[in-house]
Length: 471
Ligand code: SAH
Ligand code: SF4
Ligand code: F3S
Image (cartoon, rainbow, N blue to C red; front, side, top):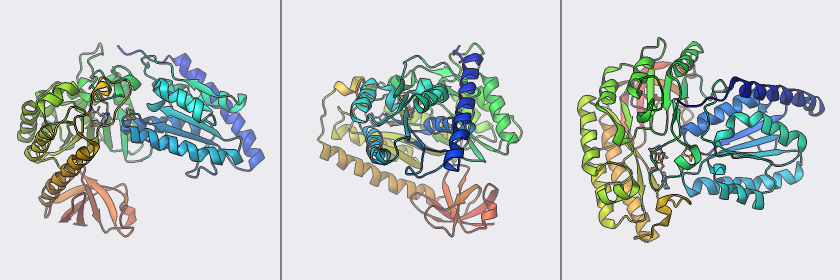
């Protein structure tokens, strides 16, 4: 069973939140307003969910929030390590902050999350970015109040990247980014060690939260008016394996499905090797579970899959997809694909395209392989040149765009229930929301509809979104 951060440890952090509050009240007198905090998130939904906890702690500590780094008293970057460009972005931002801090010496700069859980990165920050005051890894998130207090009052660099296997911290404050939709982490960490991936090293081993705690969190969310729940984990299909209670992810999903007030349930991510018939049937049978599945296949060639340590073949993956389509007609499918794994040849890549054509995903998340220090794949030599890899990547996008448009066109004429998110990103005269299968639908409507479920007839299909009109 996963270890919990003790009530005493949480209470100690609460005391630091109160101390920060006093300090901030004093500063507010001086500067005429509450001190301001800025947070930025660079990673996945779990990372976003962690930022919501960070913001909850900052809010309770008396900070207000800003998007302007020039005004912020505290800046916290919650980082990602999964690809090099995510890391480069953070280093770039830190460079900009250096100039801002030259004019505002009291500013506190904090970097947390997956990227700094790697020692070589923390060393680089210390050497090259000595204007950073606070560094804390994924396992030290709950300690942010005491670490921040130390950084603010003692004016010295504080680092906590202890590589414990992260006991679970329950009952941390939280400030959610959306009133109607919420992320609920059901487990942390990963045991799969895909050969290209840094996540198991920076997030530690799989730890499941107790079902009763998850259910209590969902009930609280419903009470506050939230109706769409996304259950999160690096591999939700392993949920419960480490618990004493006899429960798996399908059972947990049913329990959430039974909660009054929940209208939509989403979940991610599922690992193909662990996608059970029981889970497929549960998706089909539970009325509130959205008919949508994200099932990363990463590569089509059996050789590459083996070297990636994925635990399935191309044929086994496609078999699972067929099973899912049969059990849940019209299910919307998405996936992750990596192009340019070191040993991937042009011929191997044809297998990746073949999976796209056969599975017909509604959309894909595609990445060029990025070498991650400390992972087994980092030792492999590349077969293809960068140019060849980019060419394959573009072929992948072209192939998928055609399929996405075709899949979206099938929606034209259908009436879909939409949860209205807000004003459309592309056109301020339009509203935007998501249908059950998570496709973005843009339509004309009054802003009072934001946060409501409405029916929309789909009138037009694009590659990335749909247009519709209220019925
Ligand atoms: N646990 C999830 C998500 C992991 S990270 C899963 O297994 O599906 C999200 C995606 O990033 C992965 O699915 C993979 O496609 C991609 N990714 C991970 N490591 C990568 C690397 N070194 N280079 C490029 N893409 C990577
Ligand atoms: Fe990384 Fe594989 Fe774990 Fe996903 S399942 S987080 S890709 S090691
Ligand atoms: Fe997520 Fe990136 Fe960490 S994908 S788990 S934030 S390495």
